[in-house]
Image (cartoon, rainbow, N blue to C red; front, side, top):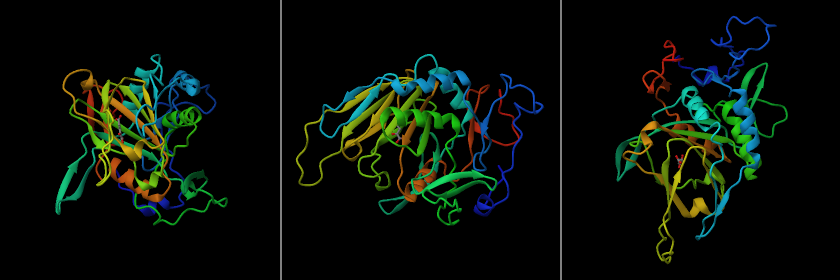
Length: 334
Ligand SMILES: O=C(O)CCC(=O)C(=O)O
């Protein structure tokens, strides 16, 4: 993949349009055919990302009325459980579409543990799109730029505002974001995607309680593909605090399900997807979370831990696994 510097990213050179292999050869006035696929493009995507097929768009637009069960029967717990949010008529196709369209990363990073530098290998594929509430993307004759959220003059922000390279949510995920906003009465500006290739992939107990999310964040978390257990447990009491009588929770999240965590949930409960042997896990599971980061610290954090510095991976349909992506390989139908 050609390396782009921060300078070229913020340069005012008009956006380069890439030829979409699926539309190549179509004359300007030809009527659109089934094979014409629109894409979302951006210099920090390794390659454009297709828009959803129209019949999936129509189904997703209907989800503003999806029904949910409230789970608030324990202290500090406030969940909305949609079983499902994404209906059976499209969940498999949407899973296959996202698995083959999106680029993923296998992020490694170093942390200091007990004073010793330790390398962490994230045990799942990840990617992220979006930008925090202090900025927005502006797409005009100067190309796609980052401007201050409340700046009517659309001036590009200082190039050192972000160390990472934020990229807009592609249309195929942005539709889900807009519909979820309408259904959950909350705003989201980030879309994080995890791909658990097998039962060996996991996420350990943690809370999404960073300061950059604000005090009572709403986090919408979707499952597509293999069913995996979602575990929740209350945080242990702080020193001097009494231990609460809470029960651990296990939700067997199936394809199409969505769990909305809101209110005091993140500041008091932790969640995880543990490793699993057998079952459906080896068919692969996609998790999409929608969140709202308030400050640039959120943007830096999400890109550091979900894109990182390494190369991208793309699904190979012939090898039935994620393989390192290279601009020369034709991944379509591999
Ligand atoms: O995969 C899941 O359901 C959970 C993902 C999660 O907890 C996270 O991305 O923070």
